[in-house]
Length: 153
Image 1: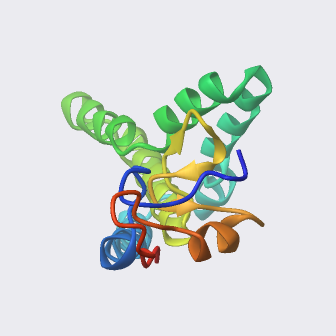
Image 2: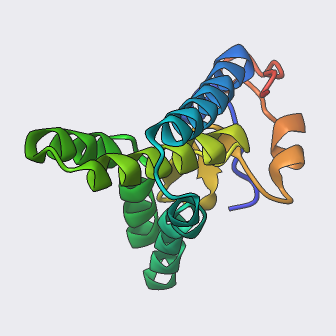
C-alpha cells in the first residue's frame, strides 16, 4: 500500500480543489458552532457529542472495506441533514442540536484533512493521503500518461 501515489487517477483532490474543500470544512465547523451557540443548547452536550462520530473508527477492526463504509456513513453530511429534516418535521429541538454538533465535527475533520475514506485503507481519503506516509506520496506523485510530476497539494 505504501507505493500508491496521489495522481490524477487516484480520486483524491489536489491543489486548489483540496484547499477549497478544507476551507469549506472550516466554514462548516465555525458556522455550525455559531448556530449551536445561537440556539442556546447545552455546551456539555456539544463537548460530549463532538467526537462521537469517531467511534466509527472501531469498524476498521472488521477490515478496511467495512471500516471505510461505516466511517463514511458517519462522516458524510447526508446523515446530519436528514436528522435536521426529522427535527423540523417533528418540531423537536434535540435532533437539530445533535445535527449541528455532528456537522461541526465533520467540518473539523475536513479542516484537518481527514476526508472520506477509500477501501484501500484508512490513510487514503478524498482529500489526499494522511499520516506519516503522506509527504512521501506528495513528492512522488506523477502523471501516468506524461510522466510529469503533479502538484499534490
